[in-house]
Structure formats: structure tokens, C-alpha cells
Amino acid sequence: MLAGRRFRVEFTDEQAEYGEQIGAVCRAVWNTGLEQRREYRRRGGWMNYRPQAHELAEAKGEHPWLKDVPGHCLQQTLMDLDKACRAHGTFGVRWRSGRRWAPSFRFPEGAKMAVDKLNRRHGRVKLPKLGWVKFRQTRSLAGEIIRSATLTRAGRQWYVSLLVDDGIAAPLAHAAPGAAVGVDRGVVVAVATSAGELVDRPFVTEGEQRRAVALQRGLSKAVKGSANRTKARAALAAVRGRERHRRQDFCAKAAHQLATDNALVVLEKLPVKNMTRRARPAPDPDNPGGFLPNGAAAKSGLNKAILSKGWYRFERAVQSVARYTGTDVVKVRAACTSQRCSVCGHVDPKSRESQAVFRCTHCSHTEHADVNAAKNVLAAGLAVTACREAAAPAGAAGTPTQEPAGNREGLLLHPQTAAPAA
Ligand SMILES: [Zn+2]
Image (cartoon, rainbow, N blue to C red):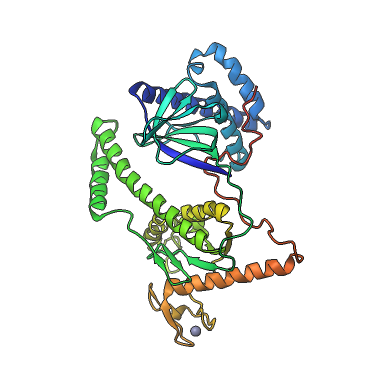
């Protein structure tokens, strides 16, 4: 199976500088390519990858700076642009601004890359024009075939993501058939299971929170373009980076545990996008043309809570591990899961006594509100799988109902287009 391996890179100063240069050229190619596509669209035409790649090759004669960077990275940039335009529409694709966009570029032809282990902690990979790139090798790559390498800078730190084929085949059946769990993703507790487990961890310490607020304040006071501002921004990025890493760690561990223990994991289908969209102020019925004091503030609190628990990341993590354990991941609609009694099925908003306590108004069943919701999620998931089995003809088990796992590098899906153009 294809999997991503991400390592922290230890560039030399020249390499770091060259990395920035490659990123800048890729960005220029992206923006130029996007402008050209938009111009074509405005005139009612279409621009595609092949003619753009051809023009890029010709442009190298006129603009020698295009030749200073690995040509494959530029081709990959045009391919990514092509894919983005197909997925989001030519006018839905964003410009890559020098400020917001973190440099990221991909080297295809991983099979030709040499990888060495330097010592217990470090390895190195040879990349075109960059030469040997040293990285912190936190896991073995033995027996894995490299497909491609992507270099990305996050804050001040560079990372290399190796897309590898680990040679592991998908299991035919889960090790614990019949074991099933429902998961409720809450705001107070990150993950509650139908088995009654509440899994959570803090992602920022109080000290870090204070520091982040102070840095944010310093940042807003600093003069634009000043050295202080750059410094404050880097420091803030470092704090946020630590939080992000802890979140990743939490998701990976919780997902691994759930998928290893269960042949069926039921998740809520959450309209995260809609819920996190900024709330529009409601018109005031007593004052035409006026608006009620809007719910935006309350909503933004919820937005932050939802996002900070990393729901989407968690879902992807479960699906990613599920490929290896043979777990079936089912998503069900989240309607009424928090108001329904998991024992008698009675639905009443009043049953939810508080954020944490559920007490049924009909049978007075009492439970942690999130666990009760998780049980409802599981029941809905079991109903879905039962329907599926009833619909499928006997003996035709193993229907590919599982959604494909998250495409980490954004390049897994079209191996045929990943081949470099001649
Ligand atoms: Zn009840």
C-alpha cells in the first residue's frame, strides 16, 4: 500500500537557500500558469497541462532562471495546477502569495533516489540538484519502495515527505471480526466511544496559551515589514507548530487504537465546512433593516473548538489505519444523536441536561452525554451495514464500501498522470 513517511530535514545553509529558490520559481510557474488558464477561460477556451508543459520547456531558453531549478518540480507544479483547476474550477484556485504560501515542491521518480542510513538517528536521500539531503530518520525505510519525495517548509523547518510502497497487502478480514464501535466527536471531549471511553488530551499548556496571546499582541503592534514582526511571527509559528504536532499525535494514536480493536468503526458525518463557516447576522424582526446582535461570536467559539479538536484529521487518520487493519469505516448522519436515548430511543432535547450529562425524560436512563451519543452512532452504523448485507447477494462479501483513505500528498490517485512528461 502507498503510505507517507515524513521526516524533519537538516539542510545545509546553501541547501536551505536553494530550497527557497526552488519554491519561489515553482510559485512563479503556478501563478503564471493560473493566469494563463484564467485568460483562456475568459475568452471561452481551455488550457491544459500538455500545452503548458510544452510552453514551459520553450520558456527555459528565454529565462535561464527556470533552468536553475529541477525541471521535474516545475512539471509537477503544472500537474498540481491542472488537478486543482479540474477539482475546484479555474477561478476557484488560489494564487500562491509569497507571504501565505509555504514553499513545497515534489520530486517524482522516487525509484531512482538513493537513500542511506547515516547513523542511528539520521538518514539521507539524494535529490536532483539538491544533492544529499540529511533528515532525522525516525523510522526504518527498509523494504519500502520510494515513489516520490516532497519537500515542504513549515515555519522555519523543512520536512521531506516520502511516498512509499510498503509492500503490505490489505488484510482479507479484521483480526477481531464482529467488534464494533461508535464514535462521537464532541467539543468538550475530543473522542467518546460507545464502549464508554473518553479520549482526550490537552494540545496546549497554559503557559503556551499565554505566550501565544502575548506574541499575537506583539505581532499586531509591530510595524509591518520590520524585523521584530518577522521574529514574532516565527515565534508564534513555533508555538502553533507544537500544538499541531500534538494534535497529529493524538489523532494517530486514537485512530490506531480504534481501528486495531474494531472491525467496524462508525463515525458521524459532520458538515464541518458548514459549521465552521462564519455565521451571518440574523435580520431583526422588530427593526427592519437592522440586525440582531449576531451569533458570530458564539459561533466562532464553537468554530475554534471544533477545529482545535481536529475532527477532519481524525477521520482521515482512522481511514488511513483502517486500510491496514481491514476495518470497515462507516459514516452516518449526525441527526439527533445527542438528543436520542440509547436505551429506549426516545428523542427529546430536554434529555440533554447539560453539556456532559444525558438523562432520558422518558425512562430516566442516565449517562455521559457523549457516550450516549456514541451508542446512537453505533446503532445507526450497524443499521447501515445490516442493510448493505441484506442488499448484497449471499457470498458476495467484501464489497468495497470503504472510502479511500486520505490522500496525504495529493498525488496517490492518478499514478498515470504522475509520470513525467517526456
Ligand atoms: Zn430512555
